[in-house]
Amino acid sequence: MTEKQQTLGGEATFSGKGLHTGATVRLTIRPAEAGTGIRFCRTDLDGAPVIDAVAENVAQTSRSTLLKKGEATVSTVEHLMAALWGCGVDNALVEVDGGEVPIADGSAMPWVELIRRAGVVEQEAERKYYDITEKTTFVSEEGGSEIVAYPDDAFSAVVNVDFESAVVGKQYATFAPEAGDDFSKGVAPCRTFVFLHEVEPLIQNNLIKGGDLDNAIVIVERPVAAEQAAQIGKLFGREGISADRQGYLNNLELNFDNEIARHKLLDLLGDLALVGVRIRGRIFATRPGHKTNTEFAKLLRKHIKRDADRPTFKYDPNAEPIYDINRIKATLPHRPPFLLVDKIIHITDDEVVGIKNVTMNEPFFVGHFPDEPVMPGVLQVEAMAQCGGILALSTVPDPENYSTYFMTIDGVKYRHKVVPGDTLQFELRLAEPIRRGIVKMDARAYIGNTLATEAKLMAMIAKNK
Image (tube, rainbow, N blue to C red; front, side, top):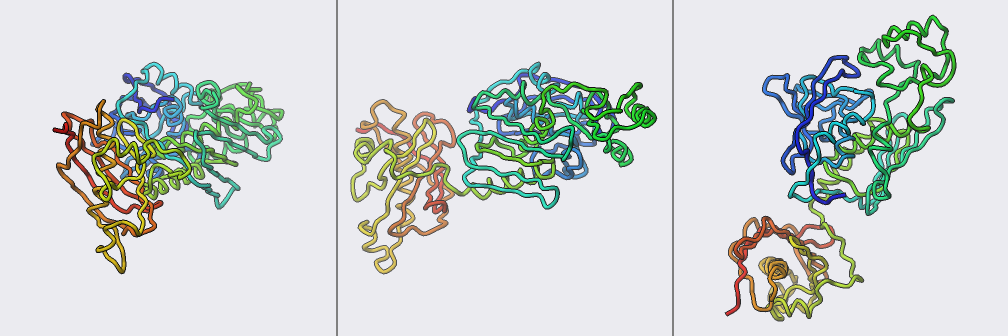
């Protein structure tokens, strides 16, 4: 899967009825700029309000996922969200002239086909991921629903369902894209479902006005007499309904033996897309539903905010550095006691990560402060700048013939004092591409998971005289 963000190559339109409202809705998916995410626009309302497809905007989860911002709502977004996620679309504007996404055939396949017609194109910006770094669990207070996530290098999901049904039985479904699983073949075609005994109460509660046998699997747990079957047929607008045996209404053929579990997996993927970024981790869901799915998505978004001030890279002192001290000395003109970087553990075209082990032997501790030694803030910034210099000089073929010089330092914040025994981890990223030798970087220094210092640096690459 590409590491760049993606959007649609053009726009695509679909018209259909909503499952719960029964109203015909026209939906158009349009391309969006990198970093936009997925957004829904209610074109039928004054001002065409826009709702970001993120978990905080979930307002209801009864039989579907409903997003709300202000007075604007859009419901039954989960199948479309799953299709956008499964097709690799990170950014899109979804325009709807009603309050519900059309149900189509009850699966995500019509949306996959719609996206394919528009095409998917790569954008310049890097795709964002959230890495599960610790066991993360959400347990529903009712219904025995649970989702657990574990750290992993790639995304995968396992869903287990048990409705205590003689027809459905216990089912599970798995999805691991890195192992070759194809969303469009194994997940997207799986249709929504309902138990026959749930149909009348749903209708009485003003739901599934748009439901019919073309957009839902109806599970017959308890057979009914011909007269009641005829009444059900009227509800679905279909004559000749047969529900005199256990199984699926009208002897419907399933796309998969475990289509029920696969559809629950589809719903899970669509709801987890409300995290707003891609996930790396193993997800295990037991009896998941929209409420549990979206509450877990909210939990992950809280963790993302929590981890925003944590380092991106995990420092392994046993790993071989990319630059050891000798290569650093060959790159930078600095020398002890003013060489403030011990090793580089990661470097790409636009980011660098370096390490500084702070010891009591540092000469600046003699006077700052002898009885309570603290590393001067200006030297922390200098150390970050030296890491940035290594990144900048890696772009020229003969770095030993160049130096980098400060031009500006902005937004410096000291959040935690640095003392002997601390290991500083510097993470610097280009704020924009290097132009005419001018380098702009966002810099952070961490002690473990604690943000110690941050700054915005600008420097100039100049050839040595």
